[in-house]
Image 1 (cartoon, rainbow, N blue to C red):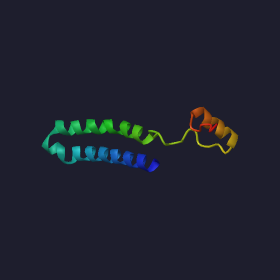
Image 2: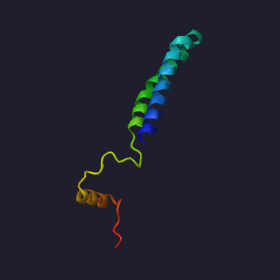
Image 3: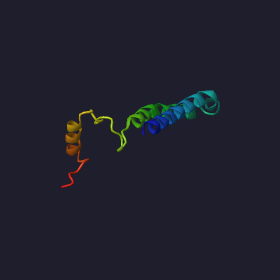
Image 4: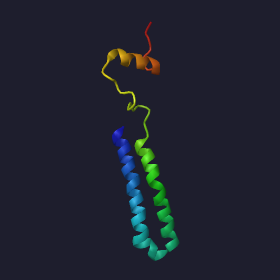
Length: 87
């Protein structure tokens, strides 16, 4: 899960850098308003990339990792509904 989130984050940030660099490298020669528009789009991408990079998948267990105490872990799993009694 972590590798997938990291890959998405770097793809988004790479796209952001590509937009920004291309806007002022060669798009500005064609159209200044288009270069500014590319920069505005590039400005919006980093917050989205941060949200994607930090989003927790439904299979991720980052806040409730096992503590090492079997009794406590069993109790938390019961509260979360992850382990059902087989009675």
